[in-house]
Figure 1 (cartoon, one colour):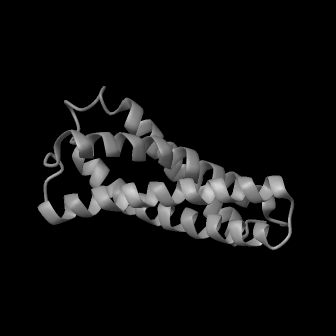
Figure 2 (figure 1 turned 90 degrees about the horizontal axis):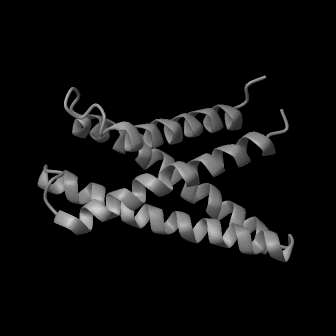
Length: 138
């Protein structure tokens, strides 16, 4: 039976795969397709994934600090703080693009930030999706 956590896991894993594939392969079809328009759509999906991952890892960290093992507490804290860094970088870059209306302004700093965001997003949301899938009882 497909429960809500498993449905969310499927959607998050699908978004992680699409972002990773577009990030890696967009250079091959950039002449035929407006890759910026695809990123504009993916940014909305990524925003939801980042926020969900941040909330999930926060709750996981909080649960770990209530008495689960020391190693799980460290892993949960690391996951939360890495997701928080991802959220800061993503929303800083995305809001700057939304404010200027141009993804070309910002130069090297924003380009590097987007490379980091587009690299971290599939890893973090993929990990959250796998934890969601395996932690579901149904």
